[in-house]
Length: 193
View 1 (cartoon, helix red, strand yellow):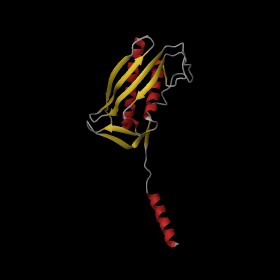
View 2 (cartoon, helix red, strand yellow):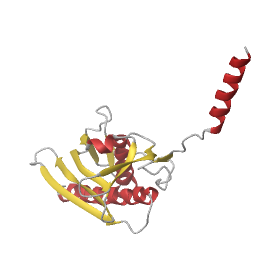
View 3 (cartoon, one colour):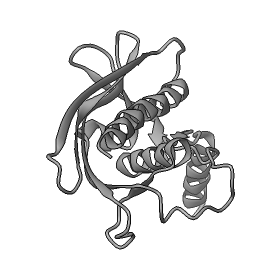
View 4 (cartoon, rainbow, N blue to C red):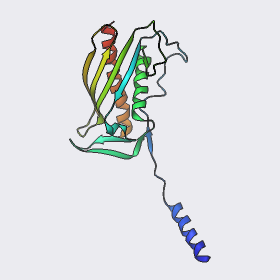
């Protein structure tokens, strides 16, 4: 019996001596980015229907990633997305559209307004990563269409310098690249009106 008590005491002490792994959680969207009003009717805003969003497998991982060389990626074990990446990207894109361009993003087929023209958008992200040469890269393709017009297929390649260290800074720069992407889409929507 004494051996059992001693064994349990040793296990209990060993459990107390290990430190829990501290994780840093990151959000791509900004909950603090808000419109001037607390409540706004957006039903008459021009609408972009995001039909599809595809991303490379490394972006679907929970851990943030960074490129170490032209062929090696590192997954940061203590730095993780607070939301699945694709959902967070959609939220950040929606915020950028709404707050900066007075447009709305629709991802559900139930929220429609037949009186408003609707643009259909498909996004293929090829890369969205801090690179080994000190840049943050967002590249891929998008397809934009509206009724009666041929679709536009656009290849994009945006980048920003990473002049500070740290994944928190990289995520803040990712938001700026999403804004660049949003500006590109909105410019093409407005040119087609």
